[in-house]
Image (cartoon, helix red, strand yellow):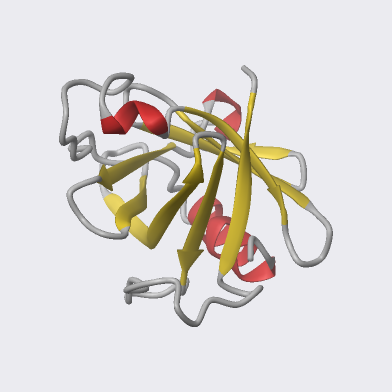
Amino acid sequence: MFNTRIQAVISVFVLMGVISCASETKKTDGEFGSGPAGRLIGKWEGMDRTGKMGAFQFFEDGSIILIIDGKPLGGQESNGLGRLRYTVDFSKDPVELDIIGIDPAGTERGKILMIVDFISRDRIKIRTFFNDTRPQNFDEENIDDTIVLDRRPD
């Protein structure tokens, strides 16, 4: 789930001055906003196992803002620490999603490897191990590594 481990990972990004990423977002059908990639664009919110709200906001240009405990990470409010970007590969099953931190100098500082299941048009499930290993499926998911997010109107 979107728990303290992801908060720690994101905090490390912030402390290292990393909150941006590469612009090589993988697409399988046209530009962001159209085809499969467009399914992810927008704001998604969910509650972690401790009852705290978190959010992912995916933008058409491949950037992303994470909101943890009401604090945005990856956007203009990052005070010069950088931005977060994402890559998504819809040709994989399950869909692969990476959040990549790049510092203001343009150096990649870390990646969170995830998988995504589109439960419906307005609900997704994201799973990550918070390390260098990407989950292969959702077979043994638990509340510590999986979160369900609902699409919110912009």
